Length: 221
DNA sequence: GAGTGATCATCC
DNA sequence: GGATGATCACTC
Image 1 (cartoon, rainbow, N blue to C red):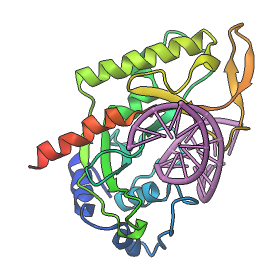
Image 2: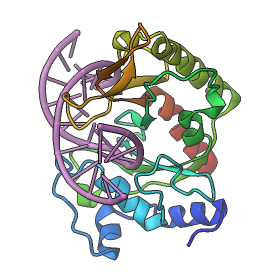
Image 3: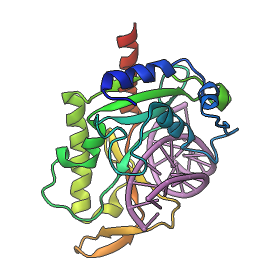
């Protein structure tokens, strides 16, 4: 059981260098041949290895520590291959919410990043777990996120959700987050009336996570 | 359905 | 080749 950040980081560091296959073997898990039908599998394996337990609750993975766990697929140059999901977007109108009160901020204030090798040419079972990084956003990063969040949140508050595309937001943006394109959830339209729409999620662009992941080399060299 | 874990697949 | 929109698996 991990009791503090130091223990958590130490445990995550012990995993670095292992392959997905080696870690899976410790838990008697069979590694899927492909992630096509097992998209969150690696993330859940790491969660298990580190003792994360928040499950599907909308809170940090390590509630006592206030730390969120994020695995991030990287190529051989250590660059993220995908954007990173943060949380579901609250689409019903909320007034006077500050960025610091949002789930976005709560999730990102303290994150344990675990980069995972994700070259298509390398079989999933042979991919290596990289050195972890315990991170908090800098003032600059926080301001960048707050700006994007404010812009997008303002549009939602004005009922302009349908005008939001993934192109908006320099570092934090909004994309669909659902089982499929037919999923529906309640939002508020420009008339202030309830309306059904596709559920959305906040995602971090890889240009943002790349900045973060880069700092691992600085701290380890 | 809503939330978690994400990657896939197509378009530009 | 990267970004965008769509999708998969699982839990409760």
